[in-house]
Length: 124
Image (cartoon, rainbow, N blue to C red; front, side, top):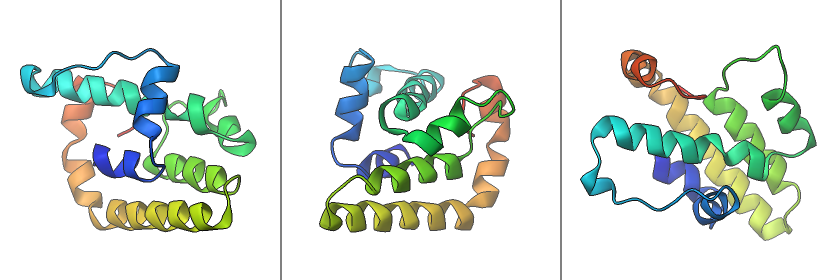
């Protein structure tokens, strides 16, 4: 679902990679585990780049050890509030579609739990 995450805010993948100096890598040369780790590092940097005042509090809270996909949805919708109305509506709509897909594919996320435990990241 990585492409769908970065489709919500146009140019977000490039911005995150530039802001956090994450080098581009050829995914075809990486193992599945390496791709998961690489994509996880990029997604894990989204809060540092796009989280607003309220979403940042969730990610910086000592009471929350792991972020959920819905925490990322909150980042996107809070970021949308800072955009002109046409961009705001587009971002909010895409975030809503992603949230719907997360709910509908809940079992797939749960069944991949073993993969995530082998390669811990901030999100499941």
